[in-house]
Length: 86
Image (cartoon, rainbow, N blue to C red; front, side, top):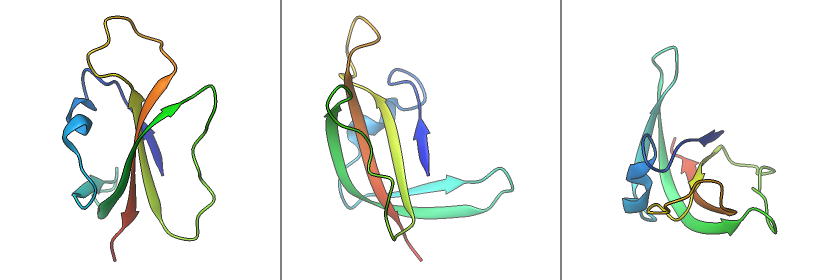
């Protein structure tokens, strides 16, 4: 699952997320899923993409970076990757 959000609104909390943290995601049907953060990366969108071909159920949360940028539209992305807990 990949979810993108704005760095200065819904995904502002991502700057505090660390490897080992547990994130909970609720589906539109009310089902709750738990994910453990395995990495936090800053990616240059001009040179790299997301790795979506995995054997495990993964969650990628993506937002613009840096969080305090004064102009929108830069090439850097803040990517939080988490593995589903069973």
